[in-house]
Image (cartoon, rainbow, N blue to C red; front, side, top):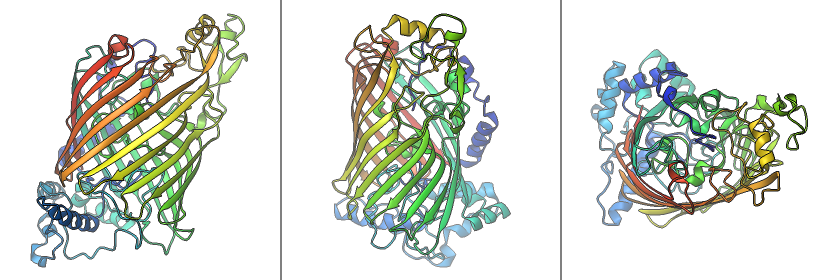
Length: 591
C-alpha cells in the first residue's frame, strides 16, 4: 500500500503535473466522457469489490423502507418515499429521455437531482434484490458509501443482481446498438471523476504525509478519473452457475497508493510522477451457488481484504484516509475464494503472489551491485544476485466473517498476505479485524485494528547496513528504485544489521445520517510506527477528523472535512512539526 510517499529524499514533482502523459489517452477519454457525463454509479455497495450501485428496484425498496423508518422517528421522509408507487405508463420518466445519447444523459442527470435513488420504471417488474432469508442489508447509498458492511474479495453474496449499477452513461446509450448488446450480455461501463484539494498548516512539498490522498499541502488536484467495465454474477439466484469480470483503470494523483511493483510502477518508482495510471482490479469471477450457501472464486488482481476504508473514492466515508489504512495492504494477484457456509457466516481463503507485486516478479533476480563492484562482502545479501522482490512468493489469506440476521452487527477476522515475512516491496504480514455496529436508523460505528510486520529489514542506524544499501547491495537500493522505495528500519541498537519492523493501527468512524442525502462522519485514529519502517519516522500518530458527505443526487457528492493530526516527535512537514491541521474536500461526479 502506499508506503514511503516521499522516498529517500523528496524529488521535484514537476513532471507529474503533465497530466496528459502516461495514460493520457485514458485521461482524455475519461475527462471528455465526464464533460458529456457529469456523474454515476451512486449506491456503491460495499467497497471496490461490490457493484457500485444497487438495482433500481432495490433502491426503490430501500428508499420506501428507509423513508418509513425515518418518518417513524419523526424525521422528514425521503424525497423518494412515494417513488415506488405505480404510475400510469404515460408518466414513465424513461419515456421522456429522448433518443439522442447526449440528451438522454443530461435529462437523466436532471431527473435524479434531489433524489436518493434511480427513478422507478413502472413498466418493469424487477426480481427480488436480496435472497430470501438473507440478513438484512444494513445501509443505503446515498448517504453511505456502501450498502453491505465491507468485507472484500468477492462480489456481494446474496444481494447482487447482474447489471445493477445506476449509470447515466448506460442509460444514455441504452437505445443504441452498443447499449443493447452490452445489456444483453449484462455488461456495464461506468465510473467517476474526483477532484479535491486542501488547505494545510504544513507548507513543504509532500509535507502533509503520512496523511494520505492529500499528501501535497495547499493543492488542488485530480484525485482519480476511473473507468469500470464489468459484469457481476447474480448471487441472489441459486439455480445456476454464473460468471463475472471487472476491468478497472484509474488516472490521477491516487495512482501512487495502488501501484504494484512491476505494473507501470516506473511512474512512481523511477520518476515520482505526481499523476499516473494504474489498473487496480483486473479479475474474473465464477459463482457456484450449490456449494453450501454459495461459493465465489475470483482470479486476477483484486483489492486486499478486509478494511473499513477503500481506495476508490465513492467507497470511502471521507475524502482523506486514515494513516492506518494508507500503510497496510492494497492489492493482491492470485486466487481468492469466498464460501458462504451459512447465510450469516463466510469463510475466505486465498493464495496470491504477495502484496503489491506482480506475478512476473516470481523468481526474477537482480545483480548485487555491491558485490559486483568489489566493495566487500554483503552480509545482508551474500550472493551475486538477489530476488527483485523477496515478497513475491506464495502467500496466503484466511478470513472469517459473521453478520447478525438483522444486519446490525458484523465482525471480520483476517490474516492477509501471510508468508515468510521477509522485507519486500510491501510484504506486510497483516493480522487484524474489522467490526461494525448499527445503533439505529441514523447512527453506526465502524472499527478496525491490525498488527503488521516485516522481518529482516536492514537497520538504518547501522553504518554498514546503510553503506551496503546506498551502494546497491539490497533489492530496494536507490540504484534500483530511485524514489519511493520501502524504508529501512530504525532498530533498537546500532550493532544489529537487521530487525523485525512492526506497526499497529486502529481507527474508527462514527457516522450520523440525518436523512437520505447527508452523512456526518467522525474519525479517530491511533497509529504506532516504532521502527519508522512505514512512515520514515519512529513515532506514534493520532488524529481526529470530521467530515460531511452531501449528495445532490445519486451521481454528485461533496465531501468537505477537517482533520487535526499529532505525532510523538517531528514527523509532519518533512519531519519538522509534531502536528498538522488540514481542511480538505472533494467533489465526485459519476457517469
